[in-house]
Image 1 (cartoon, rainbow, N blue to C red):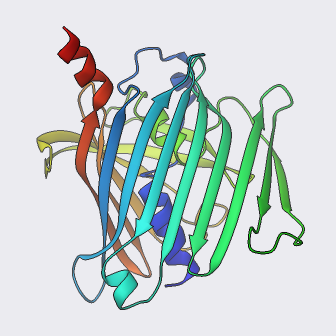
Image 2 (spheres, one colour; image 1 turned 180 degrees about the vertical axis):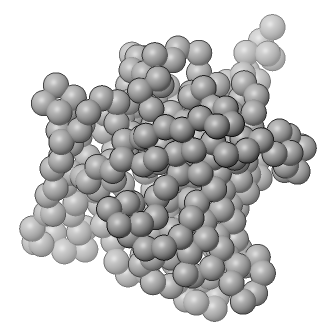
Length: 270
């Protein structure tokens, strides 16, 4: 599996790297501490629906009102047995709860024998993101440093999905989003193109069809392709499906379960 396939899976696993200035004003969050979303990713090209990855997103809150969001994507099944390719993508995102913008990202990236650790700091007063990447297998190797100018708010590829859930999504609306990954910053056009009824593991639900432009020159993935995301059209705003179409085939990510431990604990206490 080449770099493009890993990159495509990575961005779809995050469901989309999205944000918008309206999110900074939101105070009624559709998620809370204890929410856990789990997904399965399948790859289709010649053979239909080969399981390739499991994904997990967990939200925790801090005493100062911020969020810590952990996301992990891990290779599985046929990808390991036949392609003999393994990957692990782990993100720990610290999000400012007042403005809902990314403050810090810690990234652990494993692709077969290649391992990289990265850390990004977001300085909104100085309008700058600074990213440092190291190779834990070669501590003598000089760190890779990248810095870029940012505006407020900015998201990483994990906090972006939660920022998307705060937006006033409706068919016909378009947004321009700012996302930072590995120290680089991208503006992503996004369109809400339809409202569709989907059968999912959490029931049959009405969803909004969202299409971010992450493929193309100067985009997150500089090649031909497309991405589509379906988000429940209700107060929960849960991403239930995502599809990437690229040269490697179609990657289909579907929600398998959702757990809201914080809400369940509160109800049990009443």
